[in-house]
Amino acid sequence: MKLDISKRKRAEAALAESNAQLDLAHKAARVGSYTYDLTARSMRISRASAETYGLPDGTIEITGEQWCARVHRDDLQRLRAEHIRAFKERRRELVNEFRFVRPGGEIRWIEARSLVAYDDAGRAERMTGVYIDVTERRKSEDHKNLLIAELNHRVRNILNL
Image (tube, rainbow, N blue to C red):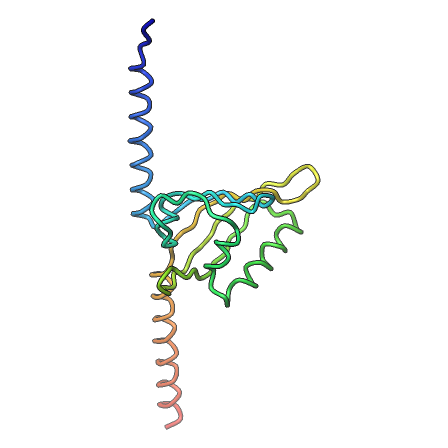
């Protein structure tokens, strides 16, 4: 018996090409995607997310504990409180900014945009969304705020004279 699998092979090749293009777009935009299962406490991440977080190449799943261990210690409690508040209010969308510590100590600012799915009892069961690396934007904002503070200081000195 012979089976012609050429259609399937072409479809697999097209899918692989499409996935490669999506990975390149994610890298260029510094965007990654994820799905977090709150019951299983496991997170499936895109390859671009793994790169953003400094995880080994090919990592597509991590535990919630592993992820939380990388969130900057000054942001973790606030982030948890925002999630709990959103779940209590049964919000469908959630946007957070937090710092993430890569191996070696490099700190990156991440903006997470999430959609939350609830079960029939109203308990949050899954979060799906994107992570956007906004480190450069945050650095620019911090620099701008520093310049504004310096300008305010100099203007006050001139007015005092």
